[in-house]
Image 1 (spheres, rainbow, N blue to C red):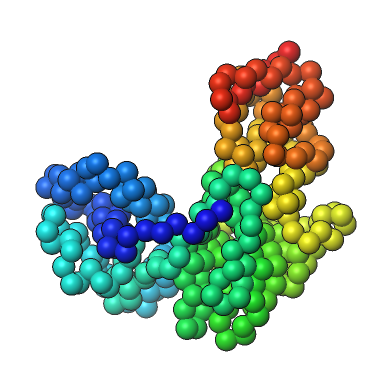
Image 2: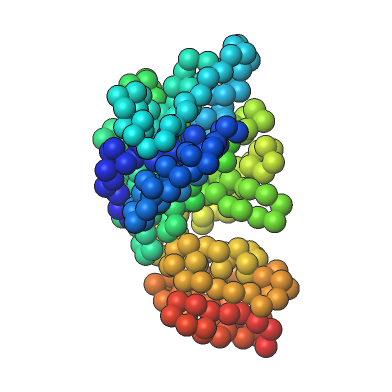
Length: 322
């Protein structure tokens, strides 16, 4: 896991390009200017992709809904062709939209997860973040609130500060705490996006995009799907652990589908696994696997069901019926 250093000017411009591309008035001349800005610069292309992913985060949606209930007017930034992009007005925001006079700025440090056992990164307020592989979080520590926008999975140890609530936002779900430890996991399933919140210490408040709210205590899990929040108690061994198993180099499952297990293994290690048959992915897996040797973990999983594991190349595998 690392904090990615980016050029502030490129970061600002990428954010405004991401915002402008969403406008119905996007023109061929703007596309030409964007192509020129991106030409030969994969770092800028990566910044643009990340800002486009963040621009749909829960904070923007939540603020849009709140402001449109009070004011009908709306104005947006427009990004002009190359040359106008670097004007003084661009100092206003990164990845921002102006909503009824309110500018939302997803500024702050971008922390990116990497494969392997994550090390905690300490934030300026004393809180700590661990990110799973293929995950990232944008950190904005403001005067009155601490707001983090997550993609993927992260474990958060929050430094108490009653005057500055600590919120993690993902897929139109907001998880708020004052001082606690909790895990947030974003998943894509055939039925849509699912957000899972597990609390290890203290209490958090989970609010869905539909406004459904619940308080989740230590030893409990909240699952949010289609705006509906469901809360359940954890198994005792899971509730008593200090950090999630993935943060210690282990993947633990209790009758989880092989497809979901493979997804977790891919995220933690960077390998790619193909399932030759949908029925293979529906097989249930239980156990505890070290992910520092992913091929061994896969072999153990498929062996239980009599499936076949085939290496397709470096870090690429296929699971099929035996």
